[in-house]
Image (cartoon, rainbow, N blue to C red; front, side, top):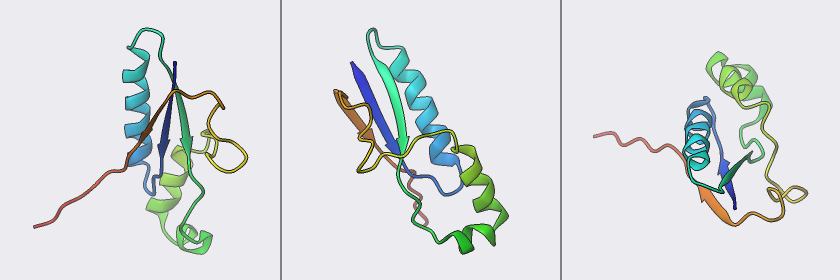
Length: 89
C-alpha cells in the first residue's frame, strides 16, 4: 500500500515533519511512503529577500511536486495532508 504525504513548507519545518511521518509509515508492514510538495505560493522575490525562507526552500528541493501532471504515484491508497499550526495567546 502506498501512502501519499503532501505538504507545504515555507521554512523547512513541515518538510521535516513529513519526513518523520514517512519514517512512521515505513514501520507499517506493506506500507510505502510517497512524499510530495505543492507549488510555491510565495513570490520568488520575497523568498530571495529572506535568508530563512531561502534556507527553508532548499531543504525540500529533492521532493517532487504534487500537481496536475504528477498525482503522487498514480496508485496511492492513502493520503496524508497536513501543516504545522501555531496558536498564540
